[in-house]
Amino acid sequence: MDNNKRILDILERYNAGDCSDEEGLLVDIWYKSLDQGAHELDEELLLNRLQVLDRRFKKITLTHKKSHTVLQLYRILGGVAGMIAVVGVLIYLAWTPKQQLADLDLQKQPGDGTQIVLEDSSIINVDKLSTLDTINTRYYRIVKHSSGELEYLASDDAPSLIYNTVKTGAGDIVNLRLSDGTKVWLNANSSITYPIVFEKNYRDLTLDGEGYFEVSHRSDTDHPQPFHVKTKNHTIAVMGTRFVVDTYLGRFQASLLEGKIALKEQAALLGEKTILSNPILLEPNQRFVDGQIAAITDPMAELDWKNGFFNLTDRPFQEVLDELTNWYGVTFVLAEDITTPVLYGQLSRKKKLSEVLQFIGEVNDLSFLAERGKIYVRRK
Image (cartoon, rainbow, N blue to C red; front, side, top):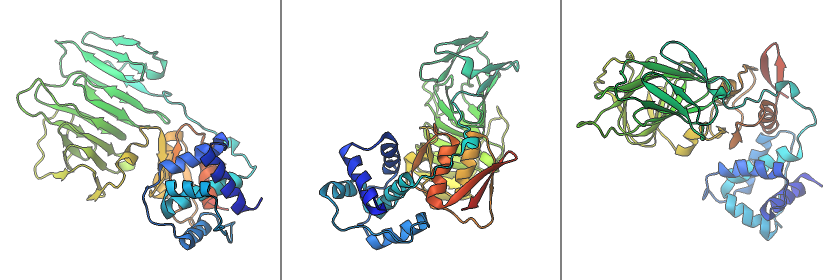
């Protein structure tokens, strides 16, 4: 069966629900990333783009005699971007090489390596806690719920000067509910330090790495009470809101999904009451990165890591590799002749590293070689 007929055959079987689990999963991954209602199909542009996606195909001709079933699926996917993504996936399915990347199978399991450091420096390994296990101390309790959430419950006489730290390792995500009801999701290789109970008129914590916050309103005070997130070089003042902060590799990026935040390049100690003068203000669906405010075109993509995916669309290749490094605990070395590859869609974080790299390599004509504890990325 030639390439064109095989692509159309998979599309037909996908639309009819008769494709294999592997074929259906990959098509679904790309489908979820598409911008529906995009431009009308430009077949010439599609063909040109496919040649970039896979250089082994010198020419791909799409028949104009598509079945009604396939046309119906094309309308669902919508536009050139969708067609590029889906056909790119189908090429990958049809032409996956037999070579295995067994030495790169470094799949990480959630819960491995997350630790709670208590005020006396004792360490609790979160992965050893079962559902509804409770850590009891003089002034507070920590409960692990069935969802995996760790909830802090403080006694009425708990002092505000007791601090805990949560650290995640490679391949870990943990979510917390702090004593004021604020929810925090912590990405891999990150840490936060926070009081077990907040002061009545001031709330703050420190973050290193990446975290998503849903800050609660305080109902027990007469005046609005800001919540401060402090990183190495920046301070964010928050009212009840949802936002993401990323400080990986020395960078600073804040993405606001709901509410308002004020931020400034101003270091502050934990527990130190901080006032930001002339801060930068963000509105919903705005991001502060590289000293500039930019619009967020796909707010849900900001939470792909929280929801168990690697987001590939419109991201610099080095940034994607940095995320893989963070999750799988490996180091990549790029050859000098590699330009920015073409990447689209999402991949599950439950996949083995070899599966992720095989997908990226097939679509972009790249090879990955594990040697001396590093992974070298080269052109095929």
